[in-house]
Image (cartoon, rainbow, N blue to C red; front, side, top):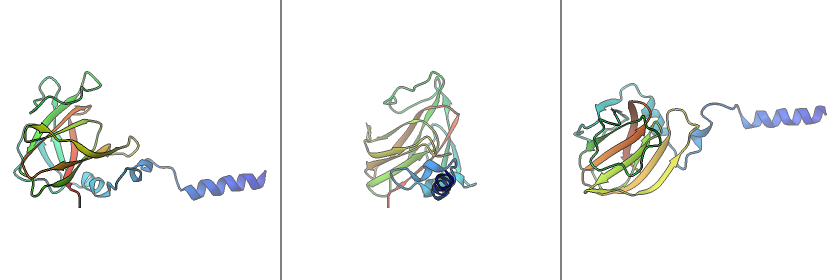
Length: 167
């Protein structure tokens, strides 16, 4: 019995401590850069509806509107799961080059990316509920034209996002 107890203790120790960040290393791709940007003190904050002069280099905090006041370029493709939610859009300038871009969200939300009057289609997504401060990441194949980023179904009145080209 003592041997079994020692074996169980050794196994638990080898697995490492169970912590709140357990899921942060289990996304389909690394979000270490996004997590660092979310934790940085110098995040840019904008109100929903604003047009950005350039793609943000770090994380972007968007102040959202209650559902009844939220304005969108096109209706969100998915209906929010709750009655009480926040949302909004931000216009981004023409992208520097076409390619795969990654958008990572801090919280549960539906994301629509609109380019050239159409919904952009994702080429991949990853999400977890067990990584504090990061909920999901979506990759899209975009051209070099301007982009409208829409979020809906957000519980709080802000969301933090990162947007960048996949290297």
